[in-house]
Image (cartoon, rainbow, N blue to C red; front, side, top):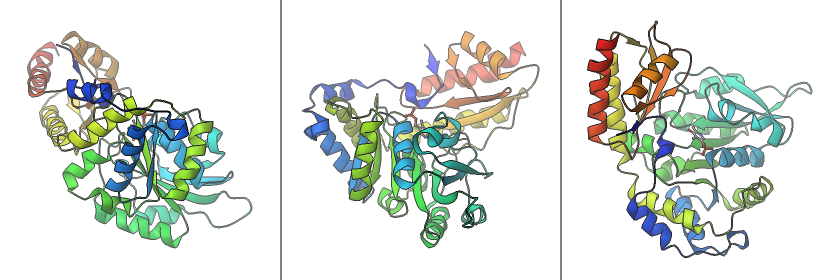
Length: 343
Ligand SMILES: *Cc1c(COP(=O)(O)O)cnc(C)c1O
């Protein structure tokens, strides 16, 4: 038994999801003739009470499109220093959109309206124009931290007053919403665009959606095309996404609980320190010397457990659809008995 805690992107389609994909009615989506893609886009838009949505191959693409549609060259994007758009998208904001980035040191990846206000640049010829704020919810590098709606409202208000656009990188938004019990439509009201990933905890093999109003999504469709993301019979993939949105949201609570269980055990172990407060399905912690993240991960692998390095001493576990109770029990046993003995 391999226990793959590397990422929630490692999930494989369930049998029922595969059946839904096999049964999908498809067409050429570049001509807007794939009924399953159309259905998925409509469903995602209406969940967040927005007018339209665009199915894309990845969350990197939906974020990059969002940056592109909201900005002009020489603008800047304001976000937390841990943001995916800054950390893990190969600096695409600069090459795809010609914009600068203005980083805020938030708390576990979360920033406040006050911090954003202080970051907005005055209008001088020698400064980039502050144009877009990106909020990540949940925040991956922040240990899966999430915003409550009461934390998001002042950010929305500030952006409105300051003529800033607001994009949500909601790759794992549903891991947050099963905790806060906020409604997606209430989230939709606060953001100009929302990106959600179907290929993370929701368990689809491929796919993300960019959600917004008609005008923005119309522009986004062109940008997707030029990024090489116009897909043909994409309905097979969209069918997996539809299945995921219909059947795999509520169960994310299980992933969050499993991660919390791992976090509680890690906090009791002598060879571990700095366990990030576990709020959703991500557990980030440090291993003490003489362990390094590399040597610890190598040792875990001998017990059939896979994890990802997040720094010289830092390790990440991520729970998901393909991790069950038995695997969590086995991981707990390895961490608290087998490795403890080996140290
Ligand atoms: C995974 C992820 C993305 C998108 O990643 P892709 O691998 O390109 O789909 C975007 N933002 C966050 C916070 C993510 O975790």
